[in-house]
Length: 334
Image (cartoon, rainbow, N blue to C red; front, side):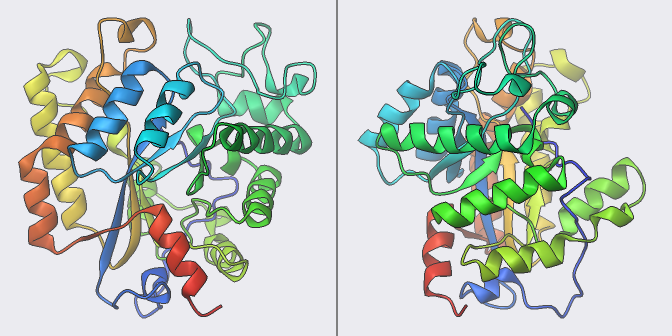
């Protein structure tokens, strides 16, 4: 599911053009454009696992995050053990958005009743989580997901948030930062110039809310805690559609996605940017989970496309993983 970066807490603002980027702080050059091509939703289904692994092993994607409460996570973790060089973090999961396919919290519904609906599944929407869950329940579930990963022998390279739930309130964000800092795991947070996010808000509401002016200060705090920080986040690919709409032919989806990703990569500003996608290889069963198969297949096809690889080379983009960001942060000047 697309990551919805809720405005209540992210605090996004474009830094002055002269500001030092986090890429520079991590040892790259002033003009370097560093990119993490990141696949969300690994572990959600067998099809999600196939797509995420294929996008990285055969394509240009280079990072993923895993939904630990989901039924197919064991298959994905087994693949990580067979290929320990893969960059994989946790897609911290506090919602279960599909109608007929759902999962519950790892802490159990009795331990965290505010995390579940009448079915005993996690809530479908971020707003429902905000209305029912306490920060203590949120933190307990986040820690349980980290714990389960480690029980599987999987040490995550980073943390991020499924549907952006952990950015939905200042209290949730605070627990996210505290857990990442305490565990020493890099957390996804764009605290730099945020050019792509700013453009996303301007294209949507037409303005950037005043309450989004905290990102620079929060990013600084995360950096000073010893964790890397993103300069920007690109998060619009889930909404891209070809002219023919949802039922357009697969080739139209592929062509459209390649064109949009190519332009997005050309438009990147200096700094470290994470580009979010949902690469999936939909089987005939996937429509029983979600109608999002075409856009997810389009993401996979774009990551496999030689045209996109050429754009990366022509633009001189530097592909980096969360593992590398963590390593560079440990070597960087505090």
